[in-house]
Length: 627
Image 1 (cartoon, rainbow, N blue to C red):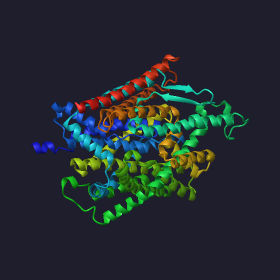
Image 2: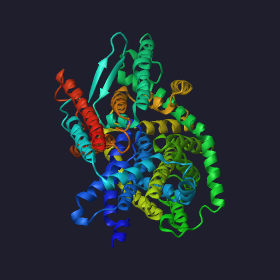
Image 3: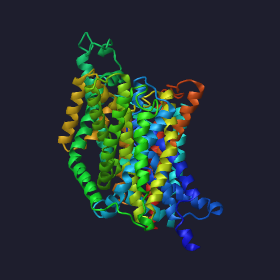
Image 4: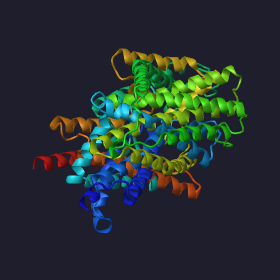
């Protein structure tokens, strides 16, 4: 009886916990990604929440096991990759006024998830088992350590609930009630149109805390180049002209606000920077990609896929792989409206084959790359850009350049992006399972369950947020999707201000030559300074904590859990606020009730409280460890 209890794994409570937490964090990640163009890993927060839930309800459903908690985090983490791929691409359809339906978004997300899981199954023994010493899979290894620690001792886990409540309350005050300003702006005297701003957002503070000081400082540097250099420069030059810098713009530069200058000019410079950084990242990763593909092919030829009978080395059967990939391709070709609207069968077939080709290739590449550098550094956006450029080029050569062709190219990118992201996610989960003695087949099946449920929640979140805030707005700039839109338009129509795009590419190359990570700098250049400033503040808090104790900000410390709670709490409340205003058929208020000088001071006080909570959580966790 004891042995059965200890090896309990794929149970009802584990599945329910994984599905519920996956939906919550999937929606929160979708909201976060639409704001700042990035998502965060959810495996560790879900693992801690699951263990806490199991212990709190032990009187009802019995004591949870380590393997059950692992299954729950495996199912729950599936939503992150679906959110990443969806928010990186689908908003472009809204920006083209080709508004996708609920079932179309959910269907594309599900197909990407299926492709990612099925293509990864035959690679598990090669990448997770045979290359165990070569590929550390940092997030997967960290999650295994956290699972072991939390199952045996749960000290400090309450900070994720405190963070969740704080993030929810902050968004309620700022978004629904609009009691205080959501951002604080300071004009720089002596420099035309130059200003710095701070968005009051615990979720963005948490992102900076998780990324660390260096990454957040580089992102802020990009934002400062935009706000203190590019915008003042454009305003100074354009202010002496009697005509717009570009003929299609009727508004004179001298009459533009800072926001208009950013939207009309700097946004395209930033898009060029992000595109260049993404492509350079892929080029730099090319040797790794090639070696990954060679290793995969060679490993399969040498019998790495041979059947095993041990529980901890049992995968889903090959029939599942063949059926899954076949379903993806057939659905894209034959399901009406799923890809390219009413597009003819031939273009749909070309698009579906493109999904199969690039999807299978980038799944193998992604699964191996994250084993070396982790999920957060996985160049999925660069892989998606390469896919879009290739498919767009094929469509343009064949004369398919109408609005439906744009939609078809984008949906190809959506499925490939989700599949590559999913491969990175499930490979980390399989590494965790390998270290804790889980059953791979059950984890793979759990990922399929997580994807099949999370796709609906993410689709609903996308439509709700798009209707309430409008993609491309200050609230939801959707930076990655706007970039994908720019790339497709550039290839199919050529109607872009290439002078600005190439300027941004040049800035990104300069950053790379200076030894900076190109993508964080480019994202800072692309997004408003108000979004970069709180990320930098979070990075400063992390540096302060690291300077006092190197153990205080590791993955298993309550400081990380509190930051994850900030993200989840603000994301959940943001979606609720969007639902409220959508039901009222009105936009959220633009002016806060408390204006003047008191409002900004209260906003800064809220930021200070959030920083204090992060510090308190980190040092609280450290004090318990040393006690």
